[in-house]
Amino acid sequence: MGQLNKALDILSHAKKPVFLIGGGVNIAHANKEMTQLAEMTGVPVITTIMGKGAIPTTNDLYVGNIGIHGSYAANSAISKCDVLFSIGTRFNDRITGKTEEFAAEAKIIHIDIDTASISRNITPAVKIRRHLTAGVILLLTFQS
Image 1: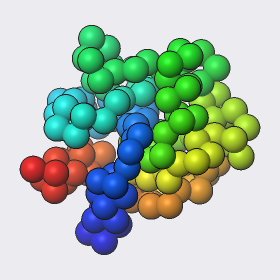
Image 2: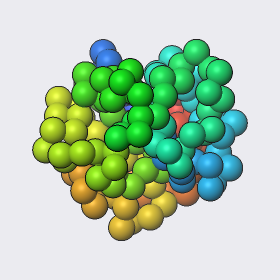
Image 3: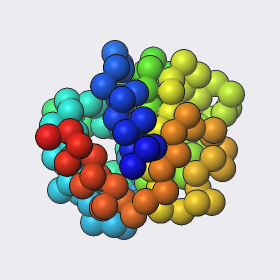
Image 4: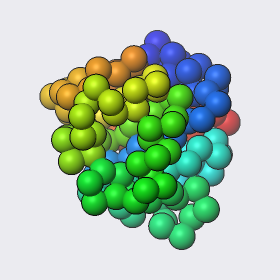
């Protein structure tokens, strides 16, 4: 639980946090839990193309898709955030662009079940390898 506690501590001190949600949340069927987490924390949600639908696109916290096919608002929020909490993403070049410029001012937290996806293109401050449904439920438990 050490990394999870560290992630929550970083998130609790954030001034401009965002959740970046990838297809892993949809694959894990953790949509309900992800929506609850976003609503409980009030943190805006940005998705990858594969993550679209992780929370309803009609939710007030949903900003849009990131990357070359994404919205200006989503890309801008990533560039201005101080904490990027990534759940179920691969950080491929279609969402990061130049990796050295991606969320350059942010502490990055990455939760994924796939060890190969964590630290592939981006080096997070906190790495958590966990099944995404279990990971999001744990975050909900710690937040409540």
